[in-house]
Length: 395
Image (cartoon, rainbow, N blue to C red; front, top):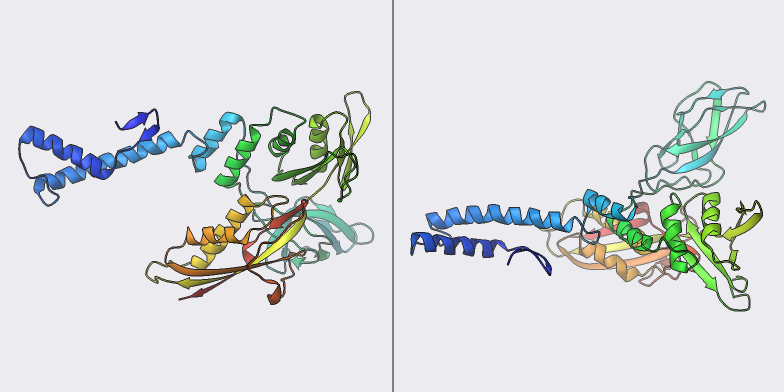
């Protein structure tokens, strides 16, 4: 039986549909020729193709109801049943120092660019003080992982009389791309623990779901009676959080942490409890480890090998790595082969070497690249960018 069954949706194939129509035609018309070359057979094939397309549409509707099989806007609707929505793309924000003539007013929307050509705009008007200095925030025009490394945002794109220079003393808070389907499915699964508190999974799920812009969380416990090797006090836990505002993270941790258990981390925030008493909440931010990859692709079938494969490879590797590797996850270099082979036809051999750096703009030496995993500490997270991936194609 085709359709919805106790085993799920059973969709008949084109061949099955055609054979059923051919059998029905012979039952009605007698021993007629229903072969694919006959006139009746061709009419049957046309009808069978249309029915097959209808069955495919019905199956897609059925699958769109479930987070594990839905995609795109259908997945957005499916995960809303558990109260979550897809995280939108965010833009990089960076604090800038402006200088020029005292009293100069630099309007909101005034633009500057980095050495790489990425354009940022001032989020609010800035008036230079008596010394001709002022600070403000600039936001990237484009959403996503747009880098604003310290000292690179120096080119004024919107001339303003009396505005002479701009720079960013520190790295910007890098934005992110829109949450992918795989990332959304994973976060939805984690959110199923959201009603709890006190357990590692519940704390992690609630941070991911209830604190805006939190994208990754790892919790490390020290259940022993002594301080552990990484400095965590006895009976404490350290929460490593990527994204979110410090105060929001601390408020949620105070709400869900177990009574009598201490928090630990590099960041300390004072939270006022329901009785008006100050409480110290500690947590950490992940240490960024920037991953570089060198990929060589040998083409086996040039007819199948598509144009633009280099861009596709970079995009797929970044998307896959961001979904797979979270805080504390080692970079498994063999996991990078799948995005290449699965998305680019006509490939023969693929060679991948990877390396890492602590600075986004400093490329490792050639001798640092290896076909080996990159081990990360429990508070580190790998960062990926297409510009840090080199692809060589041998036709």
